Image 1: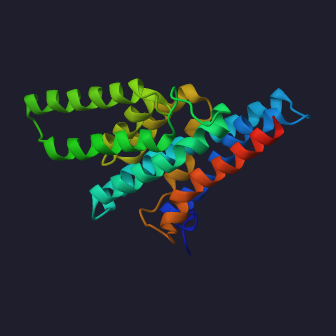
Image 2: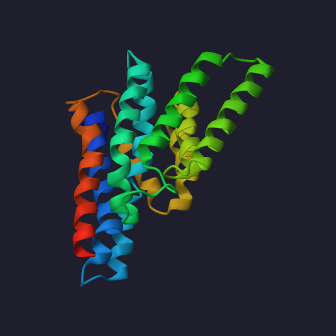
Length: 230
């Protein structure tokens, strides 16, 4: 007989769908719902709280992807291409403008975090004090760039990605505890660690470019709806 943990194991693909659905709910709340005549703050609040679940999962999956991909440079290139493609839809949906320089989409956050991981992975050497200082410098610099560019989640988003990198090989309960504490300020974000707990380390049925494309596509749709309703 299968154990409960075995029955409820989920793959990276399932985690991605959980992140996608909660993200879309969050962006609907920001872009479309306030424009509707029946707007109620309590509903808006609930939708935003559901949406907080998405980002921790995306950070976790980025780090998993970093360790499993055979070509980290191509992985970074894909993220950067979709960061460019997503920027105008992001500005339309989130800020109600075609161009808005004081806020960049989450793909730029992921790109900065991924660059940090690539550098950290090359310089990490155990028990080398000068190496620890260099790692610290890389982490601070990456967070600073995230803040200066005003990417989604700012410096905190970059640090969350780095956090998952460092706790990845720790015992699961420690990893989850650190993650829950880090995301506690977001209220419901720690709930993301429930599906993460059941992650089985397998890719599952991947629809690679669909997962990339969902982000700019749904933002463009919500942005157009926002412009129309306004």
